[in-house]
Image (cartoon, rainbow, N blue to C red; front, side, top):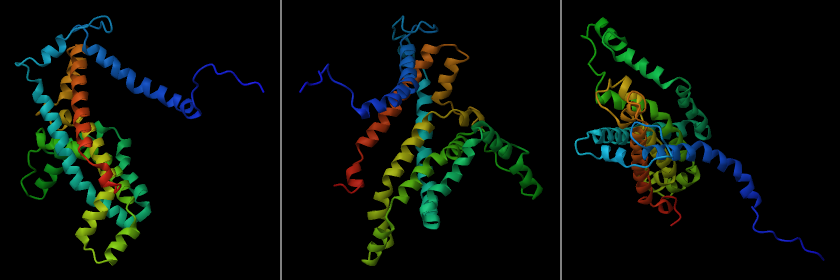
Amino acid sequence: MSQTPNYGPTLSAGARSSLPVLLLLALGFLAPLVTVAAYAFATPKSFEVFSSFTLDNFAAIFDPQNTVWTSFVWALTLAFCCVLILLAVCYPIAYGLNKVFGKWSGLVSVLFVFPLFVSENVRLYGWVLFFIKNGVLDGALKWLGLGGGPEVLYTPGITLFGMTYVYLPFMLFPMTLGIAMIPRDLVDAARDLGAGRLLIWRAIELPLAMPGILIGALLTFVLAAGAVAEAKILGGQSVITITQDIEVAFTYAQNWPLGSALALILVVIVSGLALTAMSRIDLDRILGKR
């Protein structure tokens, strides 16, 4: 019986099926990232990408007289605070959705995603009209004879409020799905065996919901670290985040290499913090595999 000659290794059916997805990821994610990295090592204030290599952009960033690191600190601090606030706000909401709507909680939580269909800038300007002097809040308080509203616009606090408002769906939806994964029978069995409410939450509900909580926290942190509209529209640039410096470098300054270098450093910092956090979390123990 003749045998089919083997001309070398061939791709499996699964590998061939994944090629379109890999190609899409390469074009949509890897190619832009490589381009930004290439610009980061280009000659400052030039567009000679892939034809020059210099560390001048990084030297300017790490110059002791450069205050750009304040922008990094503001961006990461606001992102971290945003995650903490949303953890405290979204968990009771997600827990309540699961208690009230049960298996339909995931569908109901999609309602919180509807604001994403409206431009983020439009929603933030709506809050400006609400908080501005003689605006909705101030006018209503004056009409009630309460002397007007507090001056909250154009402060770091209102910037954090805007970030919390914008990124709430990104924390709530994964958290709701995580809590929905908790088997009700397991909770009922623990209650029948005499476990108290706090013990059930600490030993059963929180560990089983942790994957969804971690995904929401990680997604929120990454998005919040790159936020720019909140600081510009609500904060009035009372604080300058690193994304604003990157925007200025790419637009007004027309210094694409410097903007790319700042963006590359931000990617490295955020990725490093996220990977470090994930590496210190024992997912096997959380998921009950060990």
